[in-house]
Amino acid sequence: MSTPVVRAVGLRRRFAHPSGDVEVLRGLELEVDAGQVTTVAGRSGSGKSALLALLGGFDSPDSGTILLDGKPVTDAPPWHTCAVLPQALGLATELTNAENVALPLRLRPGGAPKPAELRARVTELLDGLGVGELADRYPTEVSFGQQQRVALARAVSARPKVLLTDEPTAHLDAASTPLVLRLLRQCADEGAAVVVATHDERVHEIADRRVRLRDGLLA
Ligand SMILES: Nc1ncnc2c1ncn2[C@@H]1O[C@H](COP(=O)(O)OP(=O)(O)OP(=O)(O)O)[C@@H](O)[C@H]1O
Image (cartoon, rainbow, N blue to C red; front, side):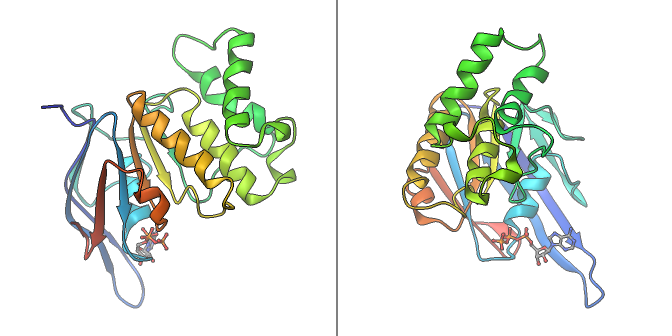
């Protein structure tokens, strides 16, 4: 039996609101295996993004533990270990699209790849997502759907062990969605543990495992 790459044990997360606290996660348990796409469904506001923020180390649970390769996550892990594609994307606007995608490769331990190798990886990813011709533009000079694909290319460029993506097809047209699905599937087939929060049935169709978040727990 494989050991899960990501394990969430007894996760609880409550947000304070003047009108009353919201307990979004109520003792949630999750295991994510390498080589699998796991999709997380659930109605709007059910806590999918909150869960990804916890798994990615951007937020801390009120109680419970997240284990990455058996070790507790206390801070956001480096990109080559765990890459996150949040709904807000978070592209660096002072860098071109190509430079954004190259960034995790430049920062990976052991140093950046040789320039030709780095260029080849960036080109392969941007071309594969249909945004190759936008490589030298800045994120602010392309549409949100195009930015979303650049941000996905950045998330996967250093081949992370864990990829957490939030609604990666939300702003895409019918032609671009299959390109994103193919890349997510490819990442898992190459060994990554891929978690996708989504409302999109086409994403659930490529999943090895589907879970649904309801009342703070996964079913
Ligand atoms: N930082 C925060 N402070 C206060 N409340 C928050 C915070 N983040 C999320 N919430 C609340 O927690 C609940 C879950 O939000 P979350 O964004 O995780 O839902 P979601 O399932 O991702 O929704 P959607 O499908 O619309 O993206 C919502 O009620 C939201 O208002």
